[in-house]
Length: 431
Image (cartoon, rainbow, N blue to C red):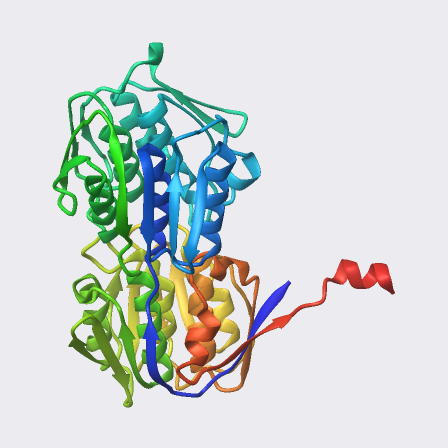
């Protein structure tokens, strides 16, 4: 077991390089199952969620060859197994992308019901609705999703309307439809950057997908996909997290290797709060020296403010002058971190999906326990801004989505380190 120990109150100065997008990588790697040949995928982030996805592909018989820290070849030509191991699949939300990919390529899928962060009700009914419309028979039992195409044929194109602009359902249907017969139209599709990235990956391998990034996506099924090379986009949420860290702790940091257009929804809110953000090529220079000002934030599907940045912006609002209102417009259970923030002296009241945050003069270091990926990152931000020493435990949540968090923050002057935590059971056994 490990924890982060943070000595806060130090402004941040320097530059941070952003890794490949977690949410794109965990969809693009399963999409390699659909390719007849070798995919070379570049800019892969080194995070535990990617490790889990790779393990699941290897359990099916995929051949994965690593070239360097961020590049690997994935060859799914000789798949030999049918079922994803239960313990791997249940640890990660993105395991559901294997359903669409396996159905599209092989006409079957046996995948554990997904896990991941507890953010309230996160059913996969829209995924099942879309796959059924394409002609699949889908059943859930014994903790698994079993899906197949009747009579061993191909899926068939269909007109599909999503009741909610679901990112996961949009990608899963797009995967399955890529090798289906005929035209599939997804209406009310989600528009997030990683959806566009998955579509671009598939198109680079021979797919025919148009409209990704809009609310109507059209997929004309092709006979097969061929191998090729593709580089994953930079991580919008990782970049936003470091921007929020500078806003909370103060200083000046160049956030490098990003797509500034993807950051506009985050940049706008930070600038409202008095943070200076300057665009320079594929970098944003973020600086904060004065006081932070209150603002209101509502999370929405892209291009709105992302739900995955909600806890991080709450950390910044906790030390802004005045009272801010934070409204969660996507998930129903994203405020579990509030009790941990209160340990540092934050004044936050939650009613349903609304949090009222009264900014305080300063936070004071205290122990915290990460309850999910983004909440854990927000606790690190709060610790960087706080006076004194903070500790964050249960950091496996954070390692799911942030590559080398300690190295990147230490590189800009943060006093943060990883400390081993003794296992109480092991200590008792050796006593």
